[in-house]
Structures are given as C-alpha cells and as structure tokens.
Length: 447
Ligand SMILES: Cc1ncc(COP(=O)(O)O)c(C=O)c1O
Picture 1 (spheres, helix red, strand yellow):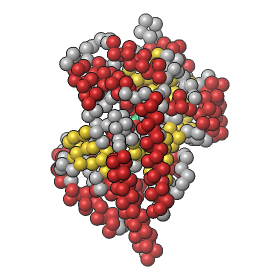
Picture 2 (spheres, rainbow, N blue to C red):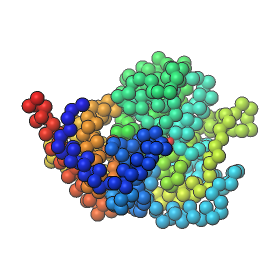
Picture 3 (spheres, helix red, strand yellow):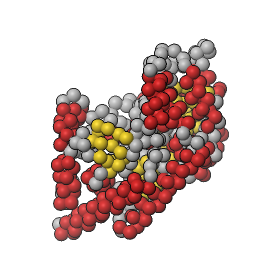
Picture 4 (cartoon, rainbow, N blue to C red):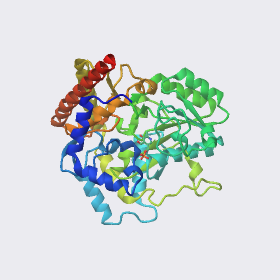
C-alpha cells in the first residue's frame, strides 16, 4: 500500500479527535458484533459515526456534532428524518396495535396505491426488505417458467441473498464466501448498458433462464440505463420467454410510477422497498397477475411465502403517509433540485481540475473520482478507493454525513440553505482530495 500523505493523516486525525464517543461505542460494539458492525454498506475505517438523532436534513452524532445528511438511510427517507406527518401516522397506528397477525385494510390500500402508480403491477405481495422483494420476484419467475437460472448485471445490487451476491460490484468476479457452486452456476452475469453482449448471453441461455433482473438506474454508481439497453432487454426477454424483473427498490422515488414509467418500459415483475415503508423496514414485489398467481394460496402447489411482519400495519401507515405527499409536482420538484445540484457539483469539479464526475438522475447522484465519462460499472470501478475514502472523511470533518461510496440523495424537505452548505463543503473536501493526489504523485515521482 502507498504511504499516506500528511493530508490523509491529518483528516484521519481530525476525525478521531472529533468523535471520541463514536469510537468508544465502536470499541464496545467490537465485543459483541463481528468487527463491531452489522451493516457492511455503512461500515468504514476507522469506525462509523454513531448517530443519536435525526431531524429534517440533519443528524447528530454521539458527540453532539450536527451533520447535514446526504444519504437519508440510503434513499429511504423521502421526506427527511422524523417527518411530522409520518410520525403522526406511526403514532396513530401504533396506538391501535403495531401488527395484528392477520390481514388489514392498509395492505389493500397500499397495493391499490402502488398498482395505480405502476400499471405493470397487477398483483402485489409484501415482505420486509428489498432483499426479500427481489428474492420473492426471482422465486415467482422460477416457479412460473420452471427454469432455474437468472441473469443479473455485474455491479447490480439487489440485496444480500445468495444468487444476487454474485458480481455485486463490477470488480468482483469470484464466488462470494458462503455461496455454493450450484447457486453460482445458476447465475448468468450480464454487462449493464452493453446490449450486444447481454442479448447474446440471454439467447445462449434461453432454455434455462427464468428471468433477467436489472435496475433502471444502478444504485451502485447512479448509472442510468440507456433507453436502447432497456428496450432491447425487454424485446429479447420477451422473444425468449424470459421474465424481466425491474428492481425499483431505489428508483421508485424517481417518478410517480418509478423509472419504468419515465422510461416507458413494462416489466413482468417489479421489486420495491425503501420509501414504500416511510422509514420503517419494508419490501414488496408484484407484476403480471398470471405470474403472481404462483403465490395464490387457494391454488394447489402455490409458493408458500410467509413473514411475521409482512404487510404490518405500522410500516404501511408510514408508507402511505409518505406516498400521499409524493405526487407529480413533488417528484418533479425534488428531481429538478437534484439535476441542479448535480450541475453545480460538476461545475465545482471542472474548476478544481479534479479527474471526477457526478452521474445520476433526478434526486439521486454519485461522485466518481475517475475521468468522465462513466456510463458502465466497470468504468466507475477505475476509481481509486483511497481517494473516495478521503473524500468521505473530509466531508464528515466538514459537517456532512455521506455514504462511503459518495452516493448523494435529496429529500423533498431540502432547501437552498442546505444545498449551498453542501456545495461549500463538497468544494473544500474535493480540494483536500486534489491536494492529496498531488502530494502522492510528487512523492511517487521522487521515489
Ligand atoms: C436496487 C436495490 N435492490 C434491493 C436492495 C435491498 O434492499 P434492502 O436493503 O431493504 O434489503 C437495495 C438496497 O439498497 C437496492 O438498492
């Protein structure tokens, strides 16, 4: 490993000095959780911030420092933290029982709401995470087609169950630990935004492929699917009798009917999560009535799919309160805010001379510390993680909470004050990265 520059050491030191309470909690956590962690995607060195409170666009850590949030629990808090109408809906429902152990009217209301927004969803089932949603959709596709294999894209993230753990990042080509060779053999890995290559693979495996699962914009990297790629996938899957699953766990917030509506693509099945739960754990999946009939309990040989908290009343009350405040005008406003922010960040990059680009769509975007253009995950994977980590730490030291991989999210409640504060901190943090890169290059030149 390259020796750290003084700049990197200073940022790390500043983080350690600022966050003794997080450090103490992490030390305790290490005694009871492996590595002190329970969520790989939010872990980072030397230890993550421990958060005590969230309100609106801000978080407060265990040391009492206030941060501008740019992540909102990985896109799920559409209206920011502790949004009063959502809190009221949760409190109202909790007073009537959080979960009752049988059907409730809110399930029907949410299924109707999602079906009205996303016409491809004729029938829907609830679960408790996006992971379970993609698992359920894949199971339905296998049961319906009686074929074993699926295709996913390299760099596509669909949660943490076994088949979709394969090629989770474009840089990972091996079999992940704990995933069996049999499971891996039933996963065909396609190339996002490469229609020729992916079409050939689908045709080659047409007899054993149950489904292709793809995000209309890769959440990992905020890389938008080219229309021709999605249209081509729709065409070839239909030709081959393979189901198309659009994973809209993240992208549902980008259009009233998700990105499938914005892009005019009609999948066979769709998976949901995140904003649908209004900040509580949730998942849902649905689509064609004939495919979803594989779950119909009145049919012989139906798929048994249960879950203690499936369709629980509290989650659905929070989700309905969230979606009730997310109509056409709200979606357009937050997406326009995101487009404007992305343009500002790219202008900062151009001025700084950094080799970087911010990609994305509407209210979701990601910084890539590598030369533009970045349209496919393998191009994003060129970025040296060393600088991404420095950017993350430099932002934290300047009062901005961000994801380790620099995905930035806008909630509906953000104002010009927060946006200006973020651009100012981003400008400073990027300056730190550019200076550290120059120092590292100078050292390398001397050696
Ligand atoms: C596109 C996509 N699918 C599935 C998932 C898994 O959702 P969950 O974390 O709720 O299991 C995620 C989570 O980030 C996601 O982004």
